[in-house]
Amino acid sequence: MHLQNQDGLSLPELKEFPGFICEACTVRSVLDRELTLSAKDLMLLMLEHIRFIDMVHAWARSTHKQYQQKLALVRRFGDQFEVPVLVPTLLERPPGGPDISLMWI
View 1 (cartoon, helix red, strand yellow):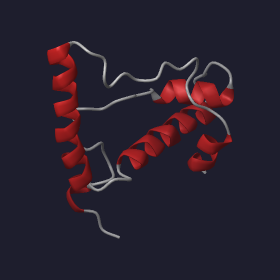
View 2 (cartoon, helix red, strand yellow; view 1 turned 45 degrees about the vertical axis):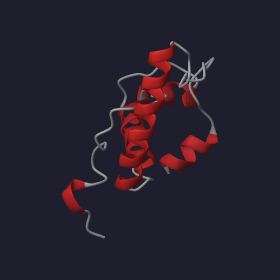
View 3 (tube, one colour; view 1 turned 180 degrees about the vertical axis):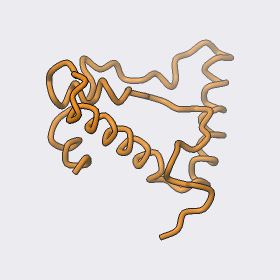
């Protein structure tokens, strides 16, 4: 399959991006330890980066574009009336577990 404009190799342009969790935090959570400079840990970081990009590209570009406009509208409403609307869920720790490592595979 040939992707146009390097789709799938980088993040799409998003102005509203709720709930970002860095790759290192996710890998730490799955491993339940601090990362080292080992080749294995670096490879897991790269796999998590790819998983993240893949998840963002799970939606069509047109869907992202459509939702960006709606998210901006919701954000403006919250700002205008000073009410919390798009508040990320506070996590005690980043997501981890076998579901993420299965996606790395």
